[in-house]
Amino acid sequence: AHKYHSPLLWTNTCCSHQRIGETNIEAGRRRLGEEMGFDTELKELFSFIYKAPFDNGLTEHELDHVLLGDFNGEPKINPDEVASWKWMALEEIKDDLEKHPEVYTAWFRIIFNRFYQYIEQEKG
View: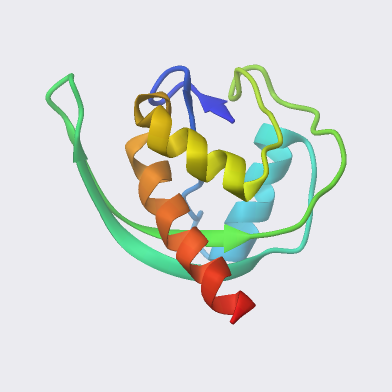
């Protein structure tokens, strides 16, 4: 999905910070509803520390948890949060990331590479 934080770059479906007393899963499901207009079961896959400088002189440095869920319907996106969305197969994303890394957020590139390795290991 396109987000406004790193404007008009493709990235993961949604991002969230937990509210007090909220689990990672609860925060993820809340933001899925707020940003993409749907709900689904989520599971936590892995976490990583992300640090990246931005052109405006600020640096992001955070611990990110990656959650996974299944959804096959049509999202009802919140235009205040999301500029666009599309479904892509894993291999399509992998190829496109290699050819056009500049159209994806820095953190999505990290997430996708880790996720792709995870999927390959799961296949055995």
